[in-house]
Length: 114
Length: 108
Image (cartoon, rainbow over all chains, first blue to last red; front, side, top):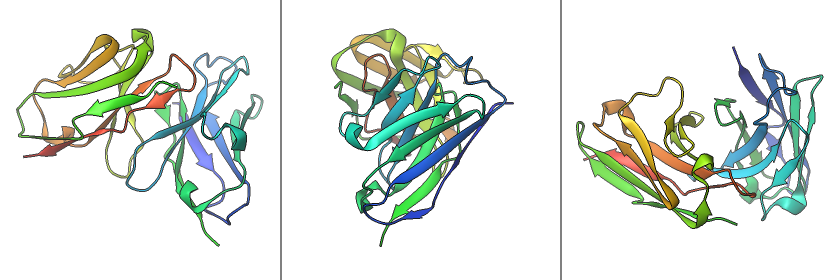
């Protein structure tokens, strides 16, 4: 059974850096040709794709957020990490990780507030 | 960046009716890399269709996808009560990957 779980802070202050971890169980990231994406969804709004990392470590980022995002993976820990710098209240959203679009985490709500 | 525009924004239909959802791309998208998702309130999205027309595992055959180039369609042949929710298209063929803004299917 493949499961993904997002973890990280529920509350961050403006200007802080957010670090989110996606832990994948039941599937080896070294075999996951499709890779892992991070996607977010502000309350009541649409899905927004943020970043993707392939099994060969190739990375891709949202154009508008590229300067603030870093995605990385630790295959031995079966984890994919997303960092987003200079957080702002508009970044308040539920953040999801997904393996190939097939398997999704439950999402984690991150609120940006002082 | 490829912009995906979904229409209509909201579709008001009755159970048993046919739903036709549109996803139009600002540039040509390879059919191999066009997906449709269903999202219910409080839940993560669920993959319905990938490769423009291939149903994901466990997806009922009342859901079908079609299209090529810049115009893609998700069709729900006969709406069931559980189908009234929000649907998104996504292209993952050209970086950056992008989603449409969603279509809400509501009960008339």
